[in-house]
Image (cartoon, rainbow, N blue to C red; front, side):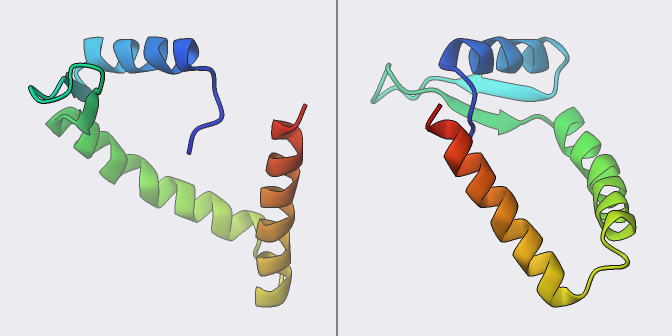
Length: 86
């Protein structure tokens, strides 16, 4: 679901872990797998930032109809998918 290299994602997770935002755990039954969950500080940050993100999305699309917003989201998904091919 994320379109970044594994090494980049790993560095991001490590930084977030150092800041106390996430917890990284390897399940006992599968040492190749890593489970990443939000730490309490990460949950607090999400609670703080999600309303801001929703507000900016609302402001950015305030002059759009519902149909235009649907089209825009689909177009952005298509652009993202096309860029993955590069």
